[in-house]
Image (cartoon, rainbow, N blue to C red; front, side, top):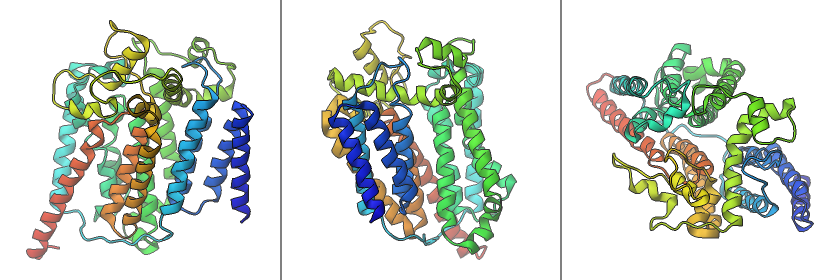
Length: 438
């Protein structure tokens, strides 16, 4: 009862902040509600999304710079309502079961191992082609816009595989196998400048390992004892790797060959301070601020999509090779009237702004639908490995969609890759059992 009353009190404070037109009071009171929910919730999804929304609210909504303008209280209130609605759906429908059953029908075979080897060879050949034909993107990340969509899909096609191995690898994982099966598939995305995708997949791997750990100590010791015996060291290494991707990518992700410094960004965008705290959050702040700043502009100016095709899913209609006009580019032209600008210039409005362009305030039920879908998949995965994998994969794609705001074909490619691996796994395990090899 005390937890409920505390949450209710924090929500009342947030509402009073909006009623009295106090932007900072609304921001910090609702952020307090989110972090309190994260610390006191028992449900996995409620706790996880409370942390996620806390970071996505507190950092980018700080009006500490001129980057993307000053965000108003109405836009902040809309985000608070969206996040609160999402959490209420999670709380209402998430299963109360705390222990995950195994539900393992199949484990990896020699053919899935061979498929993986061939697949990774193709991925790294695609990376070699990009570096040969386009240039060293890891140090010239403005070149990433020149990568053909088909090649990019091939390079990112292996991102789902670490999640597959968590649940369906029969081998005991040591440091050698961890590098081969967890790091090798995701490094290519970092090599082509997809630092956000790289970081999200790292988070998904840790979520998968956490959910696998809930199977019980005996199962964990048999297959993933090395991970759990060194969990703190691995968590620290994963955090350091994610921070390296975030910060190095931020200072490299610029046109030309010159690197940008923290002081350059602070001076260019008129930050209120150049202290250590601002420099510490600068890459994350700049990445998230674009979405909320653009959403504020879209809602305040009531910008709408004037093309015939809804921007929210327009990329799904232009997946064939050739000229493709991304919705982010159309948005840039619409907002800034840059008709003669280079098409490489693209904007990321986030899910609220992306849906508003086509459907106005229908983003409330649409986002609620995504929340319900995730909880249904999570509940189905409590006793079944396959559905647990689908849940984690869908969770990753929701992160992408929440940040970018537009549906992309690349969100669906992992499901195709996963299907190919699972069909191979099922077919050849049955065949091996019939031959008496398993």
